[in-house]
Image 1 (cartoon, rainbow, N blue to C red):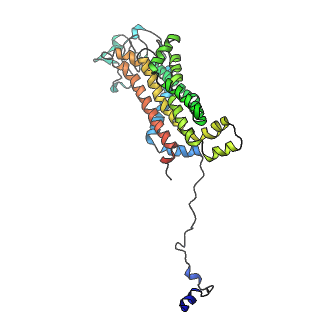
Image 2: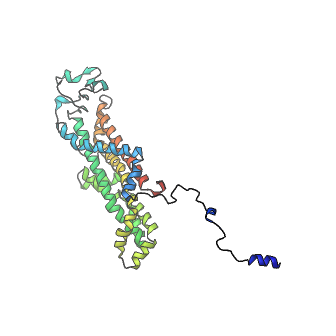
Image 3: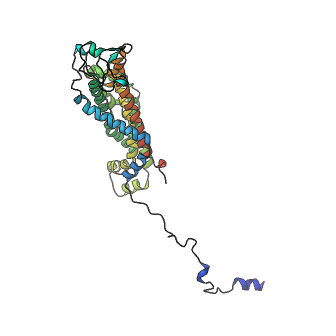
Length: 344
């Protein structure tokens, strides 16, 4: 027993080792952490966005469509409302691309030569009133893009602000604001546009007012949900303790931290707005003639679909590309801003 006790209390002999007892496992390597280049948040988002090939393709298609919407009506040489009965029902003709079907023939007959217009070439053909469809399609694309931009602005300024205020203050304020939003959301857009048509002239103004009434509800719900998650965070409590005002906290502390989700929701609202405009124009509650939109062009082409299918082909293809491209782009933006999608 005493020997064991003695072993436990034996003094430690200092320097009871030599240098060879401690050898680095990797003699020729520097044992330091790997260094990474410092990048900004936007560069980090862009680097992740570039990895999504579908989103890049969508962005390129959007850029090309916007470019044609800007310069298309200028380079055609025709007005979107210029009527010339002599040119009616001419098939698409593009010099040099006749082998792809753009030869200006109908049932094997060259309608351009038949009518004595061999020197003319309408890339998308003409409608039943002799108007150039190339000009009208890109003029209609302008209208659809204006509606899309308006929808984004309405989402950001009305929907985001409404959701931030409702979620931050909570209580009775939140209850009243959410009941108002539910009432507005329960009114169908078709009814809203129809009622606005009794007060306002049919066209782009009534569509914008319809979006202002009901189009921001989805954005407000997303913003409210994000505020409910963040308003009890430590940095919010610290700002409140230091005497920051409520609206300063909402728009300076909370909003920058949910801006990624706001951008994503805004991108997803664009296809919905374009489809809403196309649907309303298709049923006759949207853009009024002679102004064109993709929806109104589809409605006009539908009447002659069995005889002149080319009249409906161009606006449908452009509308489909717009819808698909914005969805792909929004999906890529969501993945780029979502931290769970990033590689650690």
